[in-house]
Image (cartoon, rainbow over all chains, first blue to last red; front, side, top):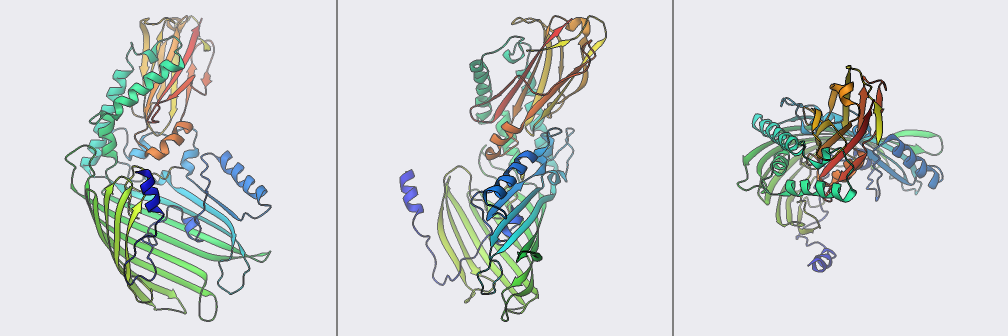
Length: 384
Length: 133
């Protein structure tokens, strides 16, 4: 089966009639690493240090290996993970030990990204490359759960604690004042893990509760990039900001444990991008672009359908329309783990015939289902 | 095995445990004779899912002397997506502090054993300290 999937994945995607330029469904979504996205960088290998020492060693190695300014060095990290102390489960659960909510808990998990590359980002007809440095940050500003969600999380945590207290009884081998062999210890731990994998176990019920989307989320990202012109001048190249607010209304709780819940989501999207060297009729010129819009999306089990509408205005522009818009309908059906059917149809901002269409099959390996851009369940913790 | 000089006085010996993890954690510490199945002389436990034990009276120094302190922590990483658990298994740590005995304040900056389940979802930490007179 795997060989069949591998062969099919090498085939080009099926495209609809009238397609000109495939739209990027993620082009307006909050970027996971704004420092990379600002300079059109998709690093083949981004370092994700978890300690200051790892960051320093990685940076020095990149500078040393490439003899000066790196050709392609990117790093993304969340300083929270560097802390040697004072980390607890309540930082990621979004509640306190007494069950009250912590709506700003996501700020602790803010991530930063930086890219140092050498490439030609100025469309001036010459092949000269610039040294580019870009930095960005992303954070979940707010996250609200309903009272029922908080109560389920608190109950689940208390149930887990009660179970753990039962485990660590006087007779438990872990609390015997004698050494245990590595094999014995491994068997004890694996037994606990096997119990937690059982459907309906305390751990599984809590895990399903934690996978529920918050009722409201607010995410912010920003990035700033500078270009090194020649050997001495550094000039602002690009900067941008992204803001996404999401309201997620559960339609129904799944009847079976492990089944996907259904949601109706309303997302408000905003983005501002400034490019000091945007292509223009008379050569590169500054241009600002403001996008504002929203998405309505319904997820019912394995099926997802949505509509996105965005208005775009140019604040300083020498080419193109001053006001344009995009309206795209999308759908997705998860046939099975690692196999999804996706489609999109609508109008893009400035494609030549203003018609986009995309119909294809996405192949992948693994258990995680397709997640549409902007979904708060995609990388919400930001750990690195 | 580390050792701590508790002494023979009636003064209390204090224990603190700082478990550094974003997984659900529960810690229990007991004092008992160094034989399998010996009765528990003293016991303290964490109160919430942080697994931390605030500085707490463990037992009188005289009660501790000649016995062994065993601290076990059970951690579940279901609070994290599967792809982030391996990194957390590497990051998580624990420190233990004893004071009040004739050995003065002592801090142990790592458990003796850290065992990760085969599926990476569960971790157990264990620390043994011989309590001497």
